[in-house]
Amino acid sequence: SRDATDDKAVVSTQSTGCTDVMKRLDITQCMNHPWVKENARVPETPLMTPQVLSEEADMWVDKKEEMSNALSAMRIDYDNVVRVGDMRTIHMNNPILKRRQRRKV
Image 1 (cartoon, helix red, strand yellow):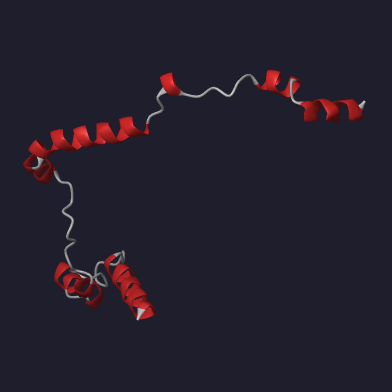
Image 2 (cartoon, rainbow, N blue to C red):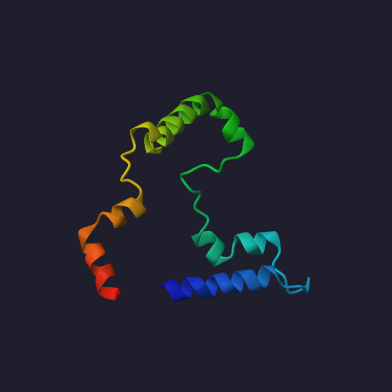
């Protein structure tokens, strides 16, 4: 259960972080701890270490191009933006707003 896992994690961190050297787990004990053993699965996604990054360097050009295309698709084309107009002019010519302003006076 989740609580049992949390308890194991707490025991593991308390045992490895103990300041008293005689009470602290050594590396073998730490690696054999139930919580470590249960959670020792290596993730499918490799960590981005310098070695992994250099092995995939030829793909970075393609990735950079994909990202540039995606970002440019999200950008606003300011040449084709529809302008609503000056809000002050719109308010001045709005008959409903004119009526409301006359009522306030």
